[in-house]
Length: 213
Image (cartoon, rainbow, N blue to C red; front, side):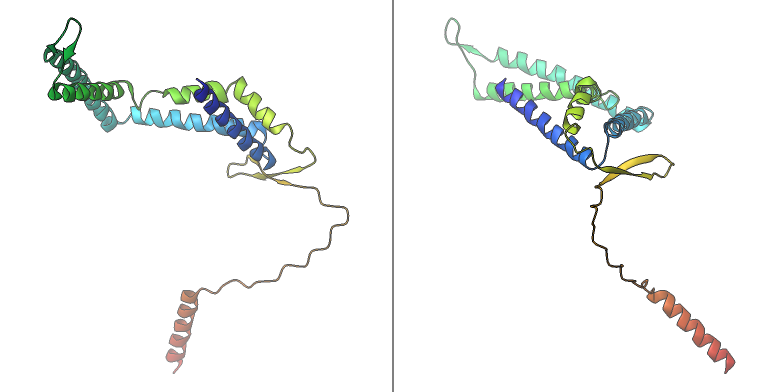
């Protein structure tokens, strides 16, 4: 229990630190929340696409058949192993090396069959449900707010239009000092010449000169 709590606290502190870096880069709480919501929506859309795919449905049915066969086979192996025991006392039994191997194989088949039967690409995984419950709920919003509340407020956020006309905060520009030194003008750099275009122009010039001759 202590190890699990320590892991949860470590993950929470890491997430808070990452949220603080996003806030320092100019992203607001609404930007982060919208980004997380879009990621979850994209995953849900991907599951809908898989559900509409005939090859994926066929593979899922084949996986379920294999899982059911492995589940039945594991139960049969367990019963076979129990029948191979030799009683050496009132409550003591002895099992040979073949029985030990069979019981390990049975448990391995049982675990694999459970995974094949329960894990489906069409359903929302438990990890994503937990993510939605925590980070898209009041707990996650509160942690994001706590991580961003100590960020300096005397900064100017730069908003640039996206491809669809929306604006998004992409960076932070600190206010310039009162006596900022003048910056030297940037040197003018000529655009690089395309060698292929120059060669084509040279060939055309030679062709015109040959026609004149």
